[in-house]
Image 1 (tube, rainbow, N blue to C red):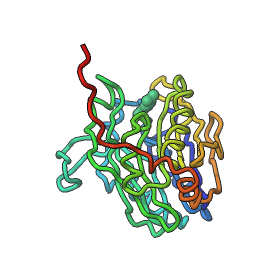
Image 2 (cartoon, rainbow, N blue to C red; image 1 turned 90 degrees about the vertical axis):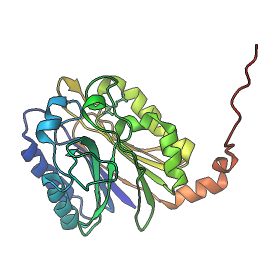
Image 3 (cartoon, rainbow, N blue to C red; image 1 turned 90 degrees about the horizontal axis):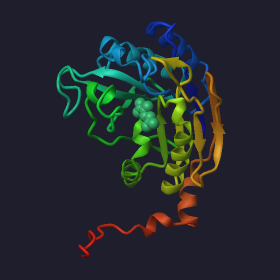
Length: 274
Ligand SMILES: O=C(O)CCC(=O)C(=O)O
């Protein structure tokens, strides 16, 4: 299976619409890949908080339209990264009208919608995304012919229980678009490898490059196999990271080294001791 991770540079000197068209052209260039992955909030930048409201789109807005077409033109499964979504009535079970979400869009090779995932863990503590956006409530997996994707977004990478739930739901390839800052790049690489090893799954983690809102981005998108080996890693700038991998390695690793079968669930809480 061939995956291309497009590590987009998100700089302020490019308009959202120019970037959208430029990224669509990059997706089209990946014809021949099975899966193409884009980063988190690449239209605005993950730290351009003031842009979230200004550039928010309904689920089926301009980014959706442009990416659906790019997926079908290229004939690839496309994880189109995430957009600032402004929810409208009927656009999701728990969605409130007007609420913003950090929502990932996935398309089939014919440009049909395959899934939408609203980021569950919002980053920023008491500012930024954490106060401007609503939290997703639903896990998302997507069945491809070769593998089952489990999707998560950026800060979600720090929450291992989310990934274990995705694995319990059948995920074999964990796809994580991000806008991870350079100053915590060591965490990015370490956590991507940890999620691969503990879940015996492929990890495809696609970040952004460039600087927006004064926050230099880490780049260094990474693909890790179920044994924790790094199959490919990008540099700091804009880059297309292409990797060939064998999805059957997930089942083989889980069979040869069956740690997931040794999980002990439902432990008793500690007894009070003195
Ligand atoms: O967890 C981190 O260090 C970065 C998370 C982040 O930037 C995000 O979720 O947008």
